[in-house]
Length: 252
View 1 (cartoon, one colour):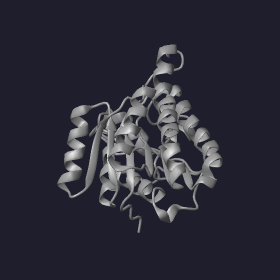
View 2 (cartoon, helix red, strand yellow; view 1 turned 180 degrees about the horizontal axis):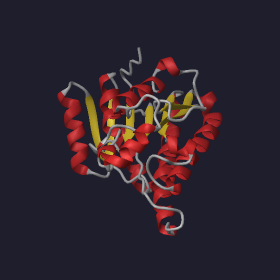
View 3 (cartoon, helix red, strand yellow; view 1 turned 60 degrees about the vertical axis):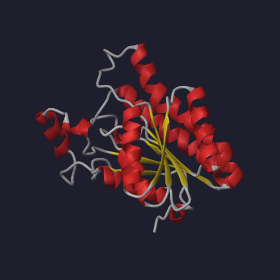
View 4 (spheres, one colour; view 1 turned 90 degrees about the vertical axis):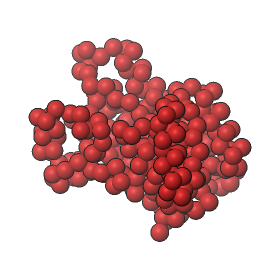
């Protein structure tokens, strides 16, 4: 199940040890995919690549600034030169900022949207042509429970808005490319047990946990395994959907 042998997967923001991206890259590699570790952090890229390779997986590291079209296009060219195809794109790169609307600046809004939405657009647009040529593609983007419930976990209104934009963009794109063999889906994680979560003051952490029926944060592996499913053959008839992974903190 969920075998990804001979597939090539790009995971943006997968160099950092602090977030979900690294676990996503490791999980896809364990399922047989050749994983492109794309990130701004050169040291983090190398670390993730070495970890994958030490476990018998295939990995290629590429420095990437998702907000730069030139950087994104160069990454896609590098991947195609190395592997000849791109099957899976996981749009994981993202940033957050805790600030009220009253204190938010135009620069704050632009910075968050540039990474979380504009960067996602650039990466997605760049892989569509090779995916269409091979009549196969999986695009999985990370939204957030904050997009659906209006914050309450991390970040300000600009973060929630950018992650809500990811959902609308993905649903529209899913309609555009469905007949090309490409599926487009999102996952919306709630609180996840990462270094970011661990840095919260205890009182804030306890308040967030109190709102989760399961009484605990999610694990990065629980997010990654859902993404591996959406990237697989078994998910071939699922497109335009978002999967909530939040322990019950938000239910549609």
